[in-house]
Length: 287
Image (cartoon, rainbow, N blue to C red; front, top):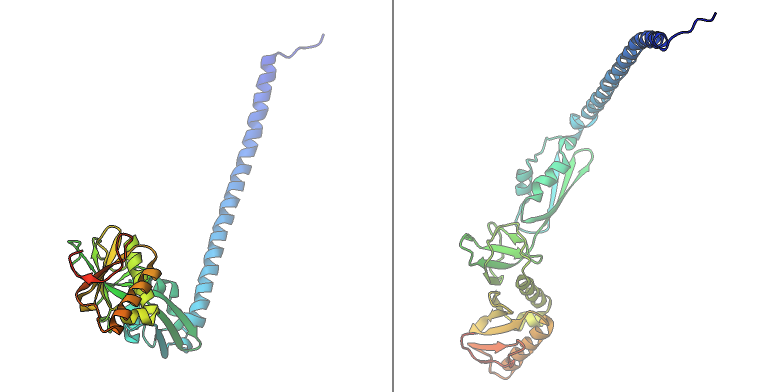
């Protein structure tokens, strides 16, 4: 008669087999994990060795090689705010340093925060020359503000960036932009529409010798709501709208030129070139 195996016995046998299989698998898994850890450790040491070797070679061949010590520093500057000595001092650059010890990226970042500099580039000329090219921001006007915290006057460039006035030469002839309410902070860019209009007027006058001659700007008042006021020499005033600048300036220059030609130059007079004005010089009154 056949012997029947109960389900319980079969389950016990399977459990024993699984346990033995698990016990055999345990050491194998442990050995695999250990092998992986060893390989990872070796990879770390290998990478570290490669990096150290690279740095050693870089120092031996470049950054600590006396052949590449700086003997000549050539500085080219587009403006007159800084001297070559100023640039070297600001960047802590001096002769005798190694060309490859200088980190140009770090130097550019240091100069980027200077409000008077647009860009600066460094070039190595082997074996011992460092070339530096500096592009300064060029002031086109002086700026005054009614903001209570704006205790100093600034300069402004054609893009609306505020510049420091210290150490600047030859800016006494620049017109003022007045009537601002902004706090003047060197490096800040003024994006107000009337600031752009004022800068546009200055640019147009500077680019046209005839306009520059007849429209002698002292300052531009940007405080009115929908126009700006040009304060001219001989105590004259012109109201200019915020649009059609070229035609309005051309008209203004022509009127002044005609008056001078006729021997009757405007003195202490005003002209309104806004849409509501008559475009004629009249005796000045408060506008």
